[in-house]
Every structure is written in C-alpha cells, then in structure tokens.
Length: 410
Ligand code: ADP
Ligand code: ASP
Ligand code: MG
Image (cartoon, rainbow, N blue to C red; front, side, top):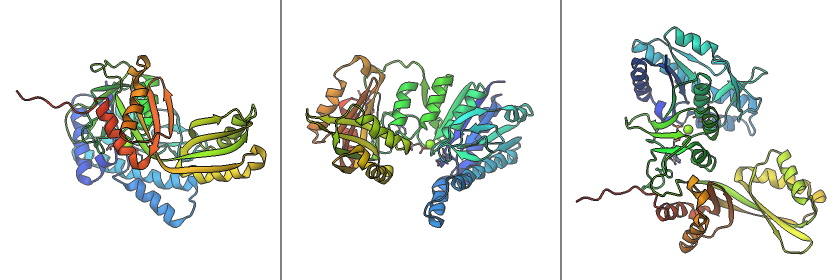
C-alpha cells in the first residue's frame, strides 16, 4: 500500500485543539487508502522551556542529560496524537525514536541519523495502525538517547520517508510553503510553487529556518518527494524536487538571512606557507565552525586574517587563540559583533555573471556597507551590520523582483 510520511511542527501541535486538527488531517489521508506514518515535534515552545529549566538548574548542563530532558517534549505530543486518533475510532500507536529503530551517531545535541531499522514500524502498519514517531531523537550504539539539533524533526520525517520508501513526505508547518524569504519578516514575500533540492539546501543552511538542512540533504540523496505546506490552510504547498522550471527569467529564487554573526581579525600573523593551516586546524580541533575567511596580504611579512563565526562561539574562539598565541605568533586580535549574513540564492546565477555586482550595487545605493562576501555557484552571501539586515533583505527582494505580483484589475 502507498505510504505517506507527514510531519507536524511545534505550532501545529501546540494545543489540544491543534492536535485534534492534526488528527483529522491524518485521518483524511488514511481514509484515502494510504498507510500513514506521522512525525511530531514537541508542543509549541516546550523545547525552549525544557532548555530554560536546564539552564536554571545548572551553569553548564551535561549534554547527555540535556538530551534526556529535551527528548521528552516529543513524547508528550506523540502520545496525545495517538490518543486523539484512538478516540476518533482509529488504531494508532506512538513510538519513541529508539522504538522506531532510529540509530544515530554518538553526538549529543547534534547527532546525525545513521540507519533506520523499520521492522517495528512496518509491523504496526501491517496491523492497520497509524504510526506516530517522536521527531528529533534516536539511539546511539551505546544505547544513549541523542537529539538531532534544533528543528531536527524534519530530518526524522525525511529519513523515515527514505527508509520506508514513502510515496511522499509532507512537512506541515505554520506557513503555507517555502517563500522567497521569511514571510513573517517581509510582507511581500511570495510563496514558491517549487524549489530545487540544491537551492533549498543553500536557503536552509543560510538561515531559512523552514526546513532543517539535513532533511533537505536526505531528500536530495534519496530522491524523496518533499512538500512544505500549512497544517491549517488546505492549499497546496511548495514542492522541493530535482529540477525546477525557472519562473520567467528569475536568477534569484530566494533570500536567506541570519543574525548573530561576529567577524574576528587576527593581526600580524607571520606570512608562512602553513599559517592558514595552523590557525584553522587549531579552531577546527575545538569544533569551532568558521564561515567566511579573508586574508589580507600586502606584500609585507605579516598578514591579517579575518573570519566570521557564530557569536555563540566567540569566547571559545578567543580563548583558544590566546592559548596558542606563542605558536601562532600573531600581534593582536580584534572582533566586530552584531553582524548578520544576508544571502541571495538561485541556480540561475551560474550562467549570469552580473548577479553579485547587482547585489553589491543595490546594497551600496541603499547605504548598506558590506563587510565580507562569499560566493558559490548558486549563492552570494554578504556580511552586514545587524541593524541593516532587514532593510538589506527588503531592498534585495525588491531589486530582484521577487515580491508578490499584484493582479492588475481591468
Ligand atoms: P515548525 O515548528 O513547523 O517546524 P519552524 O518555525 O521551524 O516551524 O519553521 C517555519 C518558520 O520558518 C516560519 O514560521 C517562517 O517564519 C520561517 N521561515 C524562514 N524562512 C522562510 C522561508 N523562506 N519560507 C517560509 N518560511 C520561512
Ligand atoms: N522540538 C525540537 C525543536 O524545537 C525539534 C523540532 O521541533 O523539530 O527544535
Ligand atoms: Mg522546524
């Protein structure tokens, strides 16, 4: 029988009423003769509340216990949904990540799914059950609960869809699809009919929180048919798929943005052949992720290197760099916080050389200073001051003609 995986996010299961609504939508699909596996997130903001409690009780909660705590959020919503379905006369069973056979790597708080043994899910489906699975969690080889990173329930859903060879994976959320940019921030944002895996992956990695980046990776690698749509409105959502027809001559499909970026500059490093290697090995050994890197050599012996990172890891980076000062032999370090990354994304850019130039012109003519830049075949990212982030997104959205097209009345 054809199988559909549906995932409902936090807002969509945020109250008893919302869970009833989800139950009705699941039943609609089941009554169309489909097998249904449902992945749920924790109710509303309950994951945030659990993390807050951990921080209230401990300065530095251990990652293992934090996973034990936050994984409970999804167990609340999964059992309530199963009860709602049973109450409506449907057979349903809820499963934690480990009961559903989800194996992860041993990395608390940010684990990747390694494998899924879907025997138990298949058994319950064969008995006519609607199977509900807790999102965001799995079990390591050491039989420890590990979570997949914030927003990770999307990845549970797509990984299950791949493993169960589902006809489709539907991500139900609080917006009606993937938009040209966050519709909660830019009023004129337009819903996309479709977007390619590669474009969606860039958007998700560059800050568009609508999908967990790893879910898009899974969808691309296993060719999962993926749709993002509303849990309330009935309208069709956005398809994420391999090939997407260009709408008109659109070179830019969307704009992503994220704040909390800091730029660090290491001044007066010796310009040796292995300087870069040494500096970034020290940072990567501490699992500090750096993003954009700029080297300023001016023909002299010393060089300055700037890089951007998530502001959350700034102190850790400063500590390790100061510890290694004698080895790196730099002069001093400066940093600039309160920055943001604004990126334009679109596969049409590959064949369109003027896109980056246009972006820089638009930003400069709107008085927005660009502090760093990085490009790939299908995106251009700029680092700007956070105070200018929203206006940067708005003026780029307009300049690249992404806004909702008004219907002309005749
Ligand atoms: P869920 O709890 O259902 O997983 P999320 O909050 O994780 O929901 O994701 C949905 C949110 O993603 C929307 O409310 C919206 O603010 C945000 N978002 C960011 N960028 C986009 C985009 N390009 N298109 C749609 N939504 C976006
Ligand atoms: N409940 C988790 C979170 O809030 C996972 C998810 O919602 O996808 O991040
Ligand atoms: Mg989400």
